[in-house]
Length: 349
Image (tube, rainbow, N blue to C red; front, side, top):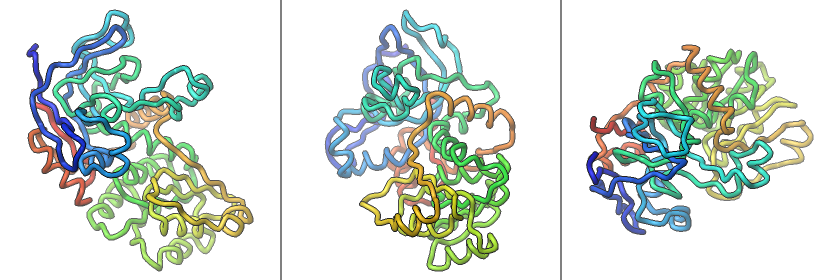
């Protein structure tokens, strides 16, 4: 094994400033594993880091290898590792919980107060190799395509939202057709929702993908959205709303189209405070708001693995662009354009 490897490194605290360069090969500790990355996918967080926005300035400490969505093969394990072995085909749960706080000790590790994230708080997977806690590795079914294996981290977000909504037999509205919203469209249909209505703002490519992945109706987000959804549900509204957009107008619409006693499940992140009429839209209508983050560790991974193994969900169309790591900036520009599904880096053999 060579002493150096190729990696995409945020080299300094500035916009851009990510270079694909040779760096020292990572070392592993006794409870860690070294994974040879075969494929890695881009998250919106990676674009925030590249652009060096306000969040990144307060969280990221360059130099840092980016990337937290990946699949690959175990190359080496630490002396205390028994859960995985050399040659295993794995993906990684990108949230690294402390295991000691109240949340971790009561089955809520996904909201660990000391949470660390691969590619954000420690070197990540936009590299030939990555060193990770072995306990965070999940072994993949050998039949799972690489392009699906690498997107399980965000897919787990969609699975947690969809499972929280208990969708079988229900009418569902999905606001926001970024990659996770598109995954939710596929999942809700596969899990027997009676009606799936997807809503997106001015993105014909993603609206087309939603239809391809299983949405019954795809609507433009505009002044007619509420009326159209009420019309499609005979004036009753939908049983559950899945909100992925993080757009304040979408949340206002969601509260108008959910039926009394229904739920609004929130994964999208809002840039600013949002005004909600709690009295009329929530309390008097018995609507429940759910804040959802990450994946329940590791229950969501088992649910996700079973869904994928069932063959009822085909997510391969979601991966629309593939790049070598050397074309890092070009790939980021595709993500920025929003004219894409998931964008992946295919690593050199």
